[in-house]
Length: 249
Image 1: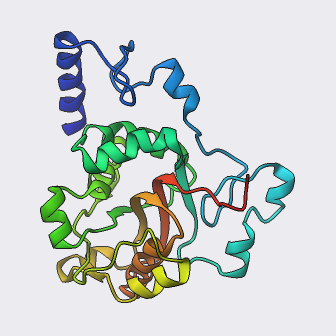
Image 2: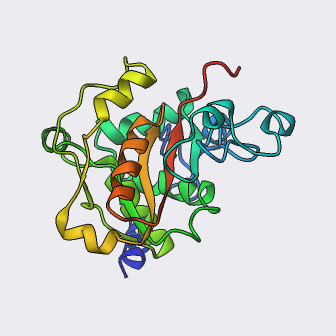
């Protein structure tokens, strides 16, 4: 019902205002689609890719029969598999940064559409969609949790159940950008808990964890560990964009 209302709203908007590219505001034929130039600039992640962390490989030969990168072979993530819709480069930042910091909440629908494509191998196993939470002060300053908007848009698109408040972030953590992978993991240790009222719903369920951007995977790992300790049967990860491995050019 909500999805149908959203389609009707978009139809009404198309009548009042011409559809525009979500990245550059150029006029397009259909609301939510990209102009030719912006679509060409986006780096969509497709096979071959690491099934462990979602990083794209340069070739099938580089992927190898295991389809996992050296990092995942050496230090396997706690989750089962991960996927990302886009490489987090300049073109992707033109979508993700306005979504997070300029209150462009309508971009959640655009990004979720491509996340559904990227996560098509994970969706059949998923039973519940859970977003990475924000600490309450960051949520207060921003006004919304971007991962929760993505999770809800994906749930409406797929028909899966969504528990936007299943995880809590009771402890403030530092900005992770400048930190190494080891420092990120240390900063996030014990940062997440399961909301007691959601524990029964999560038990024995296979969860699809949602976030906007994955860098080292430390945040997803900490959330997955919390969910598995709460009794989840398994956790997969789906994000809008994946920061590329600086060693791969």
